[in-house]
Length: 84
View 1: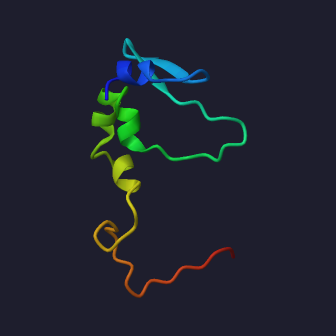
View 2: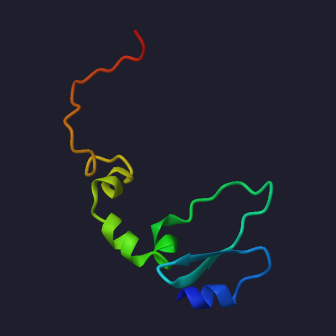
């Protein structure tokens, strides 16, 4: 979906931003609404260059869920303590 299509379908109270010369928008949160995660794909609709630079970066890799496939360290027989 293009930024123009998003803007065209918005109701009053929407947030509109200018990114790299393009008008982009997202529905505005209302007071009392719980925060929600929209994901990188939603941001990439208006910020394609930033999303492309982020993908594959150390920061993007750090945001993955911790699984046997994504945790690169060897933590077998490791113990951790908190505090003193």
